[in-house]
Every structure is written in C-alpha cells, then in structure tokens.
Length: 596
Ligand SMILES: [Zn+2]
Image (cartoon, rainbow, N blue to C red; front, side, top):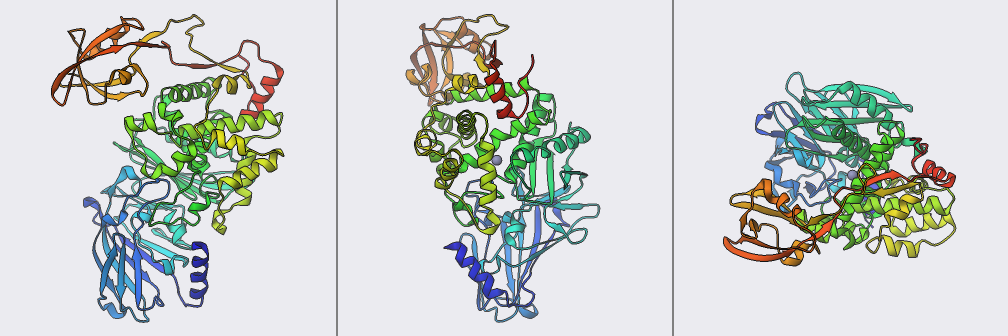
C-alpha cells in the first residue's frame, strides 16, 4: 500500500518544475555540537506541508526519536515571509499558508551522539546521518536533493553521495540521502580500485592503526564479494573509520559504512582481526539488507517500527559470512577462524537465552530487546544465534547437495530477485520458496524447527561433517572439570557485586540475583583476588554458605557448586579426515582443508 502511495506522489509531482529539495548546513561554529540547517522545499506543496524527523535510523532497530535534536524551528514562504506552523506529533511540524511558492525551513540541530552513529559535530569533524539531521516531507520524498555544507577551513567532505563540488553533494531522492552519511572534517583519506569498483577509506582521529596495512586488507576483503554475488549494487564505496574514545560499533549504508573503535583498539592482532571482521560485516550488508531486504522495510518507514521476522538473516548471516571473507582473503589463518568459531560455540553454551527464543521471534522483537543479564538469560540474539542458524542452514545445503549448493546460492538468488531500490522485498515464505526451488524439497519443517523455534544446535554434527571437532583438552592432555557457580561479579564497596547470574546455574538455583554484594564464603571475607580462587579450591557438589548484602541487608544462602570444563572449547581438526570431509570443508569455506 505504501509503495503505491509513494509511486502516486512521484507521478503527480513529476510535472512540477525544479522539484529539487535543497539542503544546507552551516558547521562553522561546531564547538557546541550544533549546526544550522536550512531546507528549501520546492513550490507545489499546497497550503499545508508536514515536515518530519525520523524516529529511528536504519541499521539500529530502536526508536531514537531523532526530532529531539531540533530547536529554533522556523518556516518561511516567498520573500522571507514567516509562516505559521505547529507540532502535530513528536516528529512532525505542520506548516500552514505556504501558497504557491517554495518553503524554507530552518532549525538548529544538536549533534552529540557519536556512539549512536546518528549525528556528531565537534571542533574536528561532523558525522551527519541525514535521518538525524535533515527533515523530509512525504510529498517530496521522491524528488532529487542537493546538500551544501558550510565548513571551517581545512575540512574536507566525504560521502557515498555523488559529489557536486568540494563540500556539495547530490542524490536522486531523500531515501538515497538518508542512507548516505556525510563525514566532513580533518581526516586522512585513501583510494583504491578493486573488481572495477572505486573505494575510498577515510580515517577521522589518531589511533594505533596502520593506515597502509588497513587499506591493503580492506582491498583483499572487498575482493571476496564475487564468492557470493554475481554483481555489485554500487560503483563507488566509502569506508569511514572513526578512531575515537568511548564509541565502538559500526553501521551499514547503501554504498558506505561508518566503523567506530577506541583509538587504541586497532592492535594487537586479535583486536585488529575483530575490526576487519566488522569491516567485512558492514561491507556484506551492502547486499544483505541494503540491496535486498525484508519487505517490511521496503521502503523504510521512518516514523515507526518496521517489524520483520528476518533480522536474523540480515544480521546473523552477515556475521556468519564476515569471518569467511577474512579467511578466504588469506587475512585470517585457519586456526584463527577456528578460534572465532570456538568462541561462538562457547558463547552459545553460556547463553541460556539462545535456547529460550527463536531467531524469528527475537528478530520481530529486536525493537524492544533488553540488554545485559536479562538478554543473556531470556533472549536470543539476531547476531549470535542468527549466525548459528545460518551455519546450520549452510551445512544442510552443502551436505544434502553433495557440496553443489551452499547458503551463498540463497543470497545470490535474493540479490537477483528482490532489488529493494525497485521496491521489492521478501518474506520468510519467499526464502523458503527459494530453498525449495534450489533443492527440490520443502523446507517448511526445517524452518519451523530451527527458525521459528529455538534451534537445537548440534555442534559435533556440524563440525564433523567438515572434518573438525570440539576439544576441551589442553595440549592433548585431559584436564579435569572445575567447580562452577554460574555468576559474574565486579569489585564493589564491601565485596563483590554480582553483574550476571546464568539462568539454571548453581547461583540462579540458590536464588542469587545481579546487584547482590557477596561479602563472605563460609564466614570468611571475600576479596577480589580470592573470589574465584576460593571456589576453585572446592569441588562440584560442595555446599558453600554465602554471606551477601541485598538492599543493604545482610543475608545468607547456601550455594551448591556444580562443575564446568576447565578450558574454553577449541575447534580442531579430526585425527584422520576422510576425503569427503575435506571436500565438504573446501566447498564450505572455499579454502583447502588445512594441511597441518
Ligand atoms: Zn550488521
């Protein structure tokens, strides 16, 4: 319905001359995190024009109420005549009496939300995601746009948008503007070509990164795209890297990404690989969630939640492919890839929520997902569990087809069949139809069991198919289990404050909850140093009398220790892999089974 409405608007307005929407922002007083925005909407809006700020931005499925950054709103008609306006809901300004001429809207935007990757203006740069900066009007959403930036001297501007001068960009419509953030400021930039495409890498901020090495590795990563897709949804792509303090995370856009990391978190190698894995993840999103995505988000509706049961496929599957890109590119060694798999196995086993909720359910509920202990105990995660389900789906396709088909084929088909920029989106039924078409049999039962119910992940089976296994041993020597309480704690005044209690574990069963402050075991004071050791000296089955404060009241409870493997799991090669295992491994990861 919405798609038809948008098309109708486009038709009625195509006859209007100069229907361009002109955006401008003055960033010449950036110290106080604000900029002055001016938008000129073309003539033809009629007597009433509703202009809006989005309630959320893409890539972060959470209501952010971005209108909260707007102040000193004003609207003017022809000749600068002030127009009446009123707020009609939290994100909408209704302007009256415009008549036949264009309407100019002006406001201040406060931009101090670096970690949300929505808007940030300071004395060194501005990062502008249009969904948090530039208002839109439904009636002009299909019209082309220009953006002019007035910046302090020495600043340079970058964006996935087409440049139209040093600090000026243009785009075919607001949807392209809103999915093409702008980075402007003092930065270092690099360019390279790969696969007939142009790439830019922009660094804002100093840090312990090696820019040359990073650019060389990004070039290897983007070269992996043809392992899944037959084409590119872009001619030019921009990596924007923020080396800063506090903020960490990344967001995908239609032909760009922003990746944030604490400035000294680019080393050592384990951290660098995580950074590159994030870069691969965001790059893969250029297809999976930008070029093709769930129909509920085509087009994106910016005023309310866009519910879909497929976010696991967009986030989890993207995560699943990201490390594979690093391995295929020769950046990650097989042992490092196995290490990442083992971490995922360990995380799954230590996350009760993973078996409490299906990936379809958690996708739908992502908009209200909790964090911390509640999430770990009761919610599946679209990334972690979504990646597990992707792995299971991939292995089943590989095994059933004797290595002829893999999950990559599903993504190539989605890319071919559902171009979002042509208004097409897909549903779970469509994905199942593709699976049935590729394999010749129904996937309804598999989907019901693994996507619509918490997936029973059988790691031994998944790994053994490709000649791998899980090992809890150290140096091939058997290591005994250790006593386990199933809690996490941080030092606090007077003792150790619980920060996490694993559902179904010994501490949970004894009735402990986060924020309890543990003071003593069996009458002896607990210190930070002694907290873990005091328990590991005991044995599974031992009962410990735990003294603790809750609501400032001293209490005691009996804790019966259980046991857990002493080591974290490792993923290792089986002793004598068969030719079939090696062949399937090769088809799975597109790299040879490791020789030693
Ligand atoms: Zn993602």
